[in-house]
Length: 198
Image (cartoon, rainbow, N blue to C red; front, side, top):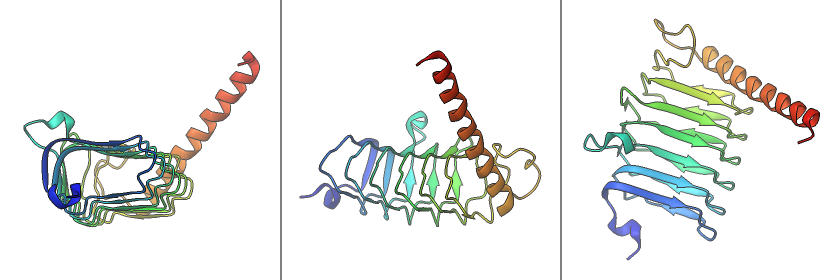
């Protein structure tokens, strides 16, 4: 039977990495996993984790992360049921991903970081129930125009937000500043390489 028909809970690590023929990750029956890394899959266009409610276990808190990284054709990620995340969420370098939503994510661990980095087509982020995180990094997402996070408070990555609710404009300004800083760094690197003949 296909893996999706059997796998419900995995108190361990699931890596889906560096595939060349896989076009879709269909794990909508999976409810819990301790660590999930979907990385470097050449043809994966969709990731369906719509039944996943929890990522991370207190028995192994260091490896309690959800990573979706370096998938060049990925366009759709479903995390409809995700309610709690013990550690980090990292969505990085998925150049065709235009939207990311975690409509039911409420609870993250005290040491959790959320990284949304180098997703060049990403236009919207939707975390309507999330209230706080240790730090929030949005970087090099130049198309990002919609950030739906009405309840988020005190993300340490946003300067000056320690004692108030973070507004839409705060997050937009932060995203723009991160993108500008990354572009400036790239220009400096190019100039250095040209100067030194690298």
